[in-house]
Image (cartoon, rainbow, N blue to C red):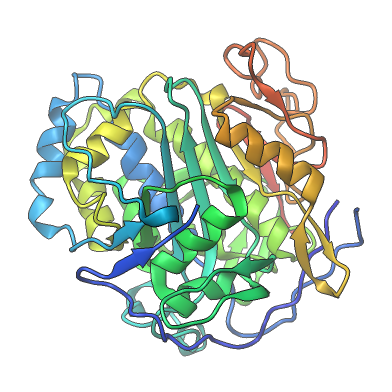
Amino acid sequence: MQGGFVDAGSSWAADGNRAQGGLHLSARGTASKPIRHGRLKTVGPLAGIAAFLAIVFAIVVVSGGSVAAVAVLNVASEVKTGIHLTHVGGKTAAPFTSVGAIEGGVNLLLTGTDTRTNQGGSFSTKAELAGSSGAGNNDVTMLMHIAQDHKSVTVVSFPRDMMVAIPKCGTRSATSSAMINSTLARGGLSCVVLTAESLTGLQINYAAEISFDGVTAMSDAVGGVSVCIATPINDKYTGLNLAAGQQTLVGAQALAFLRTRHGVDDGSDLARISNQQVFLSALARKVTSGGVLSNPLTLYSLAQAAVHNMTPSDTLTNPTTLVSIALALKDVGLGNMVFLQYPTISDPANPNRVVAQKSAASVLNAALIADHPIQLTGTLGRAATVASGTTTPATPSAGTSGAPDTVASDAVALPSSVTGQTAAEQTCTKGNG
């Protein structure tokens, strides 16, 4: 088990130019007892990542992409001007424009801001609106890696309180140690990409920033997501109260579920990450079902919700690119979609923060760079538990709900300290009730 953390308790100034049009981005390429966050009124992030993943998954259409093309092209004029990304050594990546599945692999970073600016529709109380403003904190940062052969997908969640080295971002000097969730405010989406590239060694050609309202709109568009609750969730900070059992989450309730920290397990950010993995795996199963993929109205609603609530890199502004990335996922089985938390341990200098667990992080980074499939050997995250009748990723075998569809010969078995699950894994959230 890895340590939890206390809230930073402050909002970062929005000194990076947050792009709505043409911002230039620079980019490069032991267990402890859990500690609860301090109970501040500014509660955690959205998991707006769900919104973007939903549209990516949903564009995978059975009928050769034609329905998706219509749905996405109809909202093409609404896509915001993108943010330009440059990478290590001045490299740049041109937007992908060909029709069909994108060639080769994809590294796509998704970040959710906790800003309340222009997000009144997602909150019912003044207390909930009294949070970060401007750019806000990137309290959710996820990296999606699609393998070059399009047979596996890995989604890595970076804990918001992880202390990392942050490179020079715009006018801000480099720092040897700061919370990763400060990068959006330090230098916009470009700074988040820059930091993730430095941490993993990958070049990340695609990125998007998503707001609170995106989660609400996206969950509405798919008609709700059914999640399993092992024990009741009661969170006075987000107003979320859920009984044990299967619960279908829509709109603001889905947002509250993704944001809740105090309501799950030990109240830590690491617990929240595993709670989000429960939701995302359920979302993947819902969106890849025939009912969603074959419904043009649902696809159009997903596309609209995505473009209205996301600021993309300029490599993502062409709707064809979204279709092409989605088509690369068409033949990835749910058992080969892996959601995991970047491996961390408690920070020796501050028990309320974490740092990368170097040995496990090195194995993960090397596997991603070499484009190998990932095999989990560890446990579920701390707020997740196995649903009745299924097995955990710790003992994967062919035919079980959490096992890969087929175990590739070049799959890299991650150290048991790395927690996570596959999209096929039937899991439930452990509430605080």
